[in-house]
Length: 178
Image (cartoon, rainbow, N blue to C red; front, top):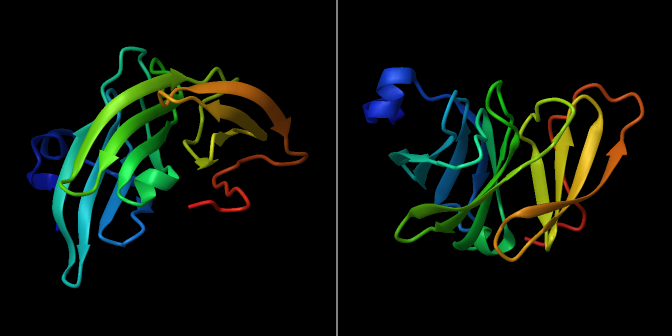
């Protein structure tokens, strides 16, 4: 299986950069390391491996762009709800989070909202969410805490510095409510 048959991947390449998988294990959503308009890559998980590769552009009006890392809301994880994509920013693009409405069957993604994250540096894209709370890794050593609004946008609440941390690349929230 390859995304190279897609014209975007064929012309500028596609580089999976993170993954989340639906609860039933049938669909994988990968971030994509890209310049310009952020994208996610999807594939069906079958006994024969990955099938039905697709590329989804996450166009947004606020110039958020760069590497994306996906994370399903509880409803999205179950097949229909929000998919959050933490986007790193890559000058001149800005870091932020794009929220997409996700439907597993038939597979569909549509951008609902994009929020710029004002961070002192680029993000690494790592996010985690539970209920109405999202945490975002803000290198080198900051964890941003945000409220998830009903429209999928996020509002900053607080930040926490992690002592001697120098590169946060993965986050988990306890308890996992998915």
